[in-house]
Image (cartoon, rainbow, N blue to C red; front, top):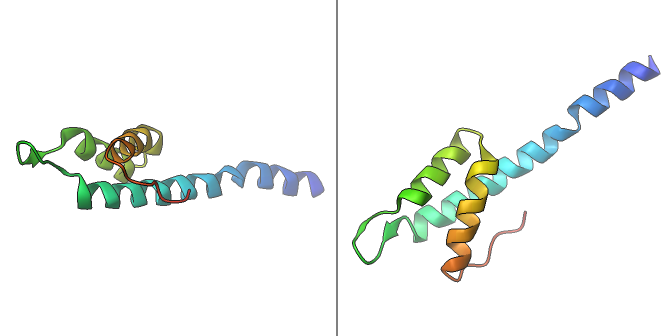
Length: 82
C-alpha cells in the first residue's frame, strides 16, 4: 500500500508545475495583449505575440512563454512573478 501511495505522488507531482506555467503564461499573455499586441509603427497586429498567446491557450506553455517574456522585456516591462 505504501508503494502505491509513493507511485501516485510521483506521478502527480508535475501537475502543480504545469498549472503554474499555465497561469504564468496567461499573465504574460494578458500584459502582451494589453500593451504590445499592435505594432506601433504600422498599426498592425504583432504576429509573434498572437502566435505565443495561441500557444499558451493551447497548453504549449514551453512554446509561448519565451516569446512573450522576450517581447515584454524588450519593451521595458517587468515580468510578473512566476
